Image 1 (tube, rainbow, N blue to C red):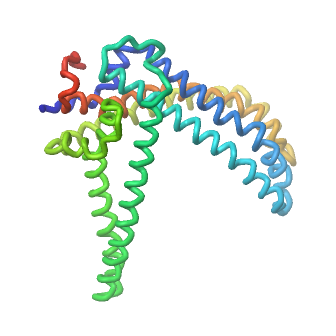
Image 2 (spheres, rainbow, N blue to C red; image 1 turned 90 degrees about the vertical axis):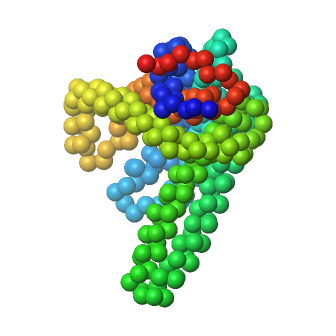
Length: 306
């Protein structure tokens, strides 16, 4: 079936058609960040304060060990929460792109589709770990072969491996890019279905994904510019507090957090509610729209973006 480069703009179609769904995705990301980053306060902050207050002397190994131990659980909590949030929102984007059903609360659910998507991502990650190992072996062979010709050519083997590996990796990612959305749509793990659908469409898909990535970066840059501008104003307004902290011989970490905390919270809130849901709609919506166009399971009756 014909694939138009317009699939790269699917995220904006969703944003225009279902703005409240995108807003709901922002709420999910905000809650995930509150839970994930919130776990750092009771679990890691005491060790951080102790380490900071002892920065003038030699670091205590026991304190460092306590800090590392205190960070393990928060990172695990953050990882699990963000994986779940990403799967929930990604499946919601798939539903928005593939169906005309009522969105409810942003097409959000937590069930078999979401856990299947997590499994798909695990499989995808393991595949590329295997690919990396193959590249490492090939790189070692090429480096050894070139070094036998001339020791100065050993670096050429490394360079060729990096270039070839990067090219093959991008090609594989494009060919397997519909793995997630197809497994979601068919409600089963379909590892090689994407390979069939993307046959002869690799360059169009690559161009569309590149365009979608650029659009996502533009969104992130705009939001980041606004956020940093506001943060600069807040920092200027709190100049007195910063000066008192800087003039202190032993700065108090609690005082620093009291000044930095609200800015960090605002940064996370804006990115969670605005940047991340829009970027997810763009980056996840693009392969969903490409799948919709290339598969025969969903008639391409969606209106044009432009």
